[in-house]
Length: 221
Image (cartoon, rainbow, N blue to C red; front, side):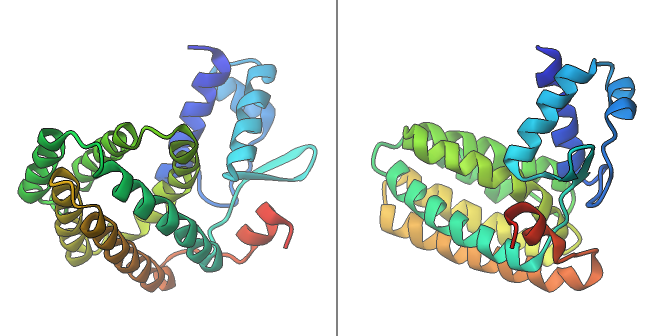
């Protein structure tokens, strides 16, 4: 793995997991030493994170982790809804029925509240299967960008066992519908899941650090 790719993956994981919190300063010298890379590959990694919208540069010498804003979360889910409902519908057309039936079975047996990390790993495998079934590079590339942000905001729902249990059931319905080749049901179930997920995340924001700077820093508004 190239040094820039390694630095990017470490920083991406730390931003998504919350180790690097919104507003954290990423100083080049400090991060180069910490990650064991030279400043050139570090700058390449920071450039990728900047393109992802996960960091911002208020000035050429200052890079900070983007803040999270409720307005941007809503906008993100608008894009996510359009992409994921389309993906679910397309996946049901040329589906690997056994694969999605197996995934639906895994969701049925999952206790997300007991092990959220295992649940999110299962979602990642479901997303991979969905991307493969869709077989549309433009759609899956757009979904990857959205998911880079979703990993951050989805953590806000981890402390709600009832929401996690509902999310498991919703994913089971989506996977089952795709496995049965029912695109309408898959898209509808995706719509319901995303509505519930957004409602839960926004409701949880009162207990978390949220700033309006995220939208303005990343889009200039």
